[in-house]
Image 1 (cartoon, helix red, strand yellow):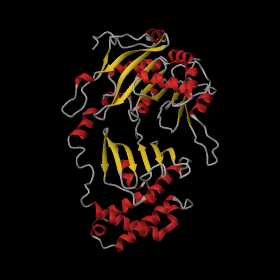
Image 2 (cartoon, helix red, strand yellow; image 1 turned 90 degrees about the horizontal axis):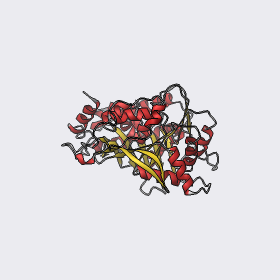
Image 3 (spheres, rainbow, N blue to C red; image 1 turned 90 degrees about the vertical axis):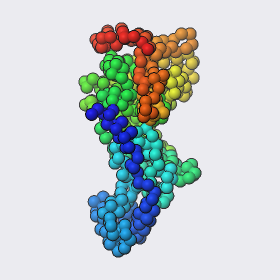
Image 4 (cartoon, helix red, strand yellow; image 1 turned 30 degrees about the vertical axis):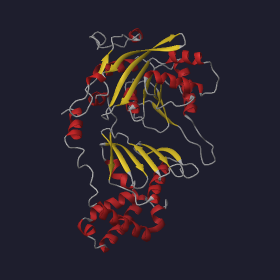
Length: 449
């Protein structure tokens, strides 16, 4: 059975129904957990959060104490299933609380905690409410502090927003009161345990076989590629797959806000930005890392996301011998990504004429890959567009492949459409030919849509 069939089977053959417990019967279990948790706090007290206590020793103390407390509790749940209650409590106290099982669920791609009592998840592109909650705001804050401390960052009322990551690379965003009005907010975009391959993207319908072959040739031929799209559209996943096309004998420098890329090549140098410390010093920005990477003799520069004046440094690198660079940018369409890069380049503060920046753009960027999350929850590449130069004051694009929205939806509400060739042949074919990069015969010869 193919990957697509397995996903469809789980998603449409009743996979969503019954996945989460209903609220019936949950109250008594929650009440028992609260009682045991409070008694545990009363018994162990500060030992639970004393960093001098080793993890194994603390876990042993917690297990023994939970067993003693449950043995004294004569409620039906404690008598009937003490092992399950103990496991849930250990998750809450030593792990990430009630979201620990959600982190272990491979079908969940995003976890959204909107205060201690409201938790949502994304499964197969759709958002669902789950019957899980933290004991209170303090419990949620302790879990947040545990996550943030692991990566040497801090979050409090004075600095109420932070980006961090879990040990597996999952991306974490935290917003605390007074910025968050209804309690602390925690958003986790889960990291795939195994990096997706191009075959996975084809199986998901993100790209077609033909477009995948074209992208492989473009990366091997050292074209500069920008992946654009909205939040949660799958840009980083696609960037990771494209980065895997880079030959293993090249020196690659990756630059990210929070390390997510999973490159399998041997010669990879990973750089991560750093926020300011408690005194407001020591910040290392993406732009600082881009400029420093130029002194590291990179064959390729891969930037997780460009969002500020680093855009200008990246464009200059692309134009001064660092061909084959890859990055992502937030934008609603290929044309918008050009405008976004132009705006961010102006944020560098060098007071450059707009035309000079546009000429840099037209010369640096070769290909724009635009990705969307569609209404059915699927992530699809909707445009493959070539940057072909300047006409007057305008950077000119031509769409090579466009997603066919006219195909409609199937009986499960999924889009039938796919990427279709527009009939235009890319101008970079000569560049690929000069580099000795072959393209599949007939790729640009079949009838266009």
